[in-house]
Image (cartoon, rainbow over all chains, first blue to last red; front, side):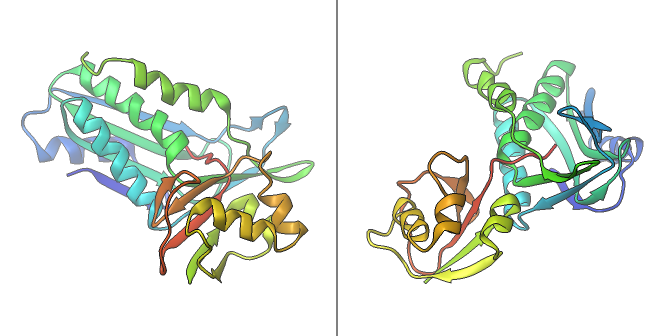
Length: 156
Length: 83
């Protein structure tokens, strides 16, 4: 049911929402998240960013995350698109779209999928800065964002 | 034998993306990491306990006590930074 895609090319939010709406008449709410490449990180300018991933495991990890969200909430359909390769500031990098009958489930599942993607999906960013290239360090705040779902009820 | 993959900063530090490694004894992820560390300073440093890295076996994240068997695909990589 869910759509999981890794791609170098850009994506279009309107197109992906329309595709989801076309697939079900039960949808009452669609929540989406778009991640964008910033021009600053940890105090340095970022001129470009290159994404490495683990082919096979990345798709599998994203499928597991969407399945887990679908267990917790009433998810009718979902789309996750993550770009790989080299991106520039202002480029779109990740899209999560979740459709449900009602907004509470769509909002919660969308945020849950992003929080888990940040800690469980094998992607790594390398930034080009004026001081040279550097691998982005994982943030403790991402682990915290994921962990708070463990103590939260799934009902909305 | 195991197929061992390295990604991102760990791949660059070790200098290879993929290699064949003998099944360690005992056949666990922890023993594999010990055997790799014992190879040379490059591995010992990249896989030092003080560094943060993760392990996946057959594309599922696991802990150091996870069991291994011949033919498994083991990946070792830094904490992920997608999104």
